[in-house]
Amino acid sequence: MKLYHYVHCPFCVRVRMGLNLLKQPFESVVTAYDDETTPIKLTGKKMLPIVVHYNGVAQNESLDILKYMDNKNVLSWKLLDSHSLELNPLLDKIGSLVHSLAMPYWIWTPEFNDSSRKYFQTKKEVKRGPFKDLVKNQKSFVLKLDELLKLELQPQLSPFYKSDRLTIMDIMIAAHLWGMYVVPEYRFDSSVHTYLQKIKELTGFNYHEDYWR
Ligand SMILES: N[C@@H](CCC(=O)N[C@@H](CS)C(=O)NCC(=O)O)C(=O)O
Image (cartoon, rainbow, N blue to C red; front, side, top):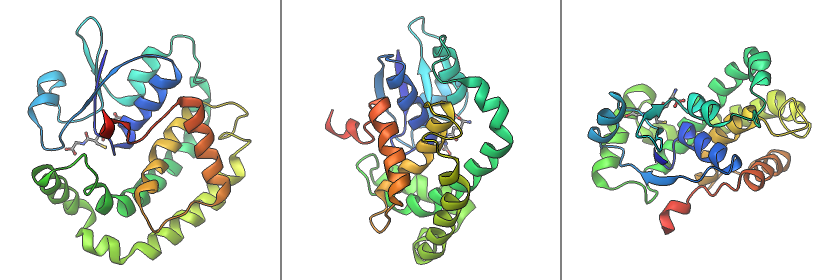
């Protein structure tokens, strides 16, 4: 199967982590952020991740893809239903802070060229304001992120989120947090770093591997 994805995108990272964990091989197709034609042709929407299955059927929505592939329930999907009331607001807050902190750096990774960088920045600045202001406000975003992780993530790790085994919830959390590894000024608290590295080990995830293909 083929996976169309953006390297930085947390929803795409979910699928990369999940498919690796499920030992499901895939052909990786890193798609340019300004390529509207490829995703629209496949699913009618300019949105990744998209997988094209062996039978040619294209599927989007990260969780739908993983659920479909996880026929043995390795990722304990029921836990997601029972914890969604706490997890979804936590993911929204983490996602918003990580995006504000990491976007100004993502655009300088090898995934982007001049054209896709301009497309991404123009689109994202409509919602978040100028990237130069995001960088200026870095300290306050970092304070908020650290506080959030300390109060709402760290106490729930046992050693995984509300579980002693890795579940889909860890993949969702880690996929967002992973973006912070590109922010050169940032260091996770060591317990969060250990948690993320454990997930990396279990899923065989390698964030920037496509740059060496
Ligand atoms: N609910 C979707 C969200 C996917 C999503 O938001 N993808 C973003 C990238 S992070 C996207 O493709 N955006 C295209 C654009 O804004 O041009 C999922 O879980 O797969």
